[in-house]
Amino acid sequence: MSLLDWRPATLAVLTTTAALWPFWMGCGGTVIDDAKTEAALKQNLAQSGNGKVSSVECPSGVDVETGATFECTVLLASGKQETATLKILNEDADVEVTALKSSK
Image (tube, rainbow, N blue to C red):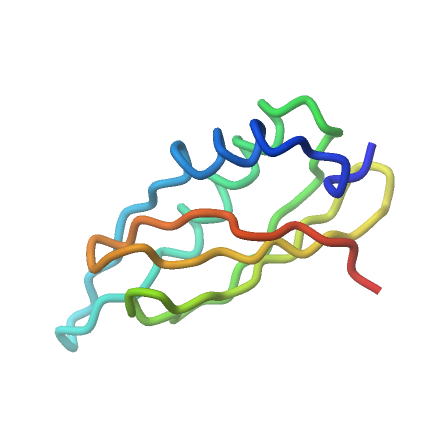
């Protein structure tokens, strides 16, 4: 089953459970911890029952800026690739999944 088949209720669960912790850099800036983001997103996708996830890859060094978005690549066990768009909700680096779509 494609991630595109998700129901709105499933997306709401991801929104409330995908809060991620910031990674504090020595420079004083705050960036999203890509490893924690990948693990949380993979866990949430697995719990949703919408297909087995082989891997999730998120960019490193994403600055925590409220309202900013970034994309993570999701590889399903079926070999299909999906893109998850995440939005940074606040300066605490809480995020929500705003879109899931097939990658071309």
